Amino acid sequence: MIFKKKKYINYKNKFKYKKLSLKYNLKSKSWFKLFEINKKYKIIKKNDNIINLGSYPGGWTKLILNKIKLKGKIFCCDIIKNKKKNNIKFIKGNICKKKIFNLILKKTKKYKIKNIISDISHNITGIKEIDNPKNKKIIKTIINLCIKKLIYNGNLIIKVFLGENFSKYFKKIKKMFNFIKTFKPQSSNNFSKEIYIIAKKYKKKIKN
Image (tube, rainbow, N blue to C red; front, side, top):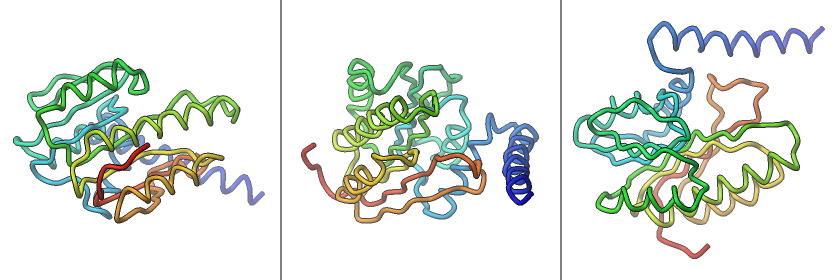
């Protein structure tokens, strides 16, 4: 009986934010996740240049646009294209593909990137032998992007899924930044294994 009640609360939480996102035309309930993260950790600020990975359907992009104003730039990447706006540059494709990774480096060459944020989620199967390697590859690629593009004192927000590789990559990111925390937004489904790593004040470039 207790289990059923807890399960009901989880779904109630899920539908609450879904309804709110529709009410306020926020693209998706993921808007609330970034809102909670930024309210607590003050990552995104006026005039920042940001790489936004896993940007579709645009909930995070909408919040970022409101924060960075006209002088900041957003470089979005997803396998599904977002709508065009003046200060958004879009790269369509999988960040883990070498061609797309290099294209991001090319598009951002003239810009100082203050924040790299990722809400990427691969197609979860529930089979750890399939899911863990995919999750590992995404995290490894984003860490490499930080090393290539993030400026001194820059910040990282990355969605990860708890599993056998979590501790290893948490330690890796910890070496790169002066501040690191894990955060589970209230708007995230309680039964989901997703969690966000918040890393601030990038130290310096290190070898892979």
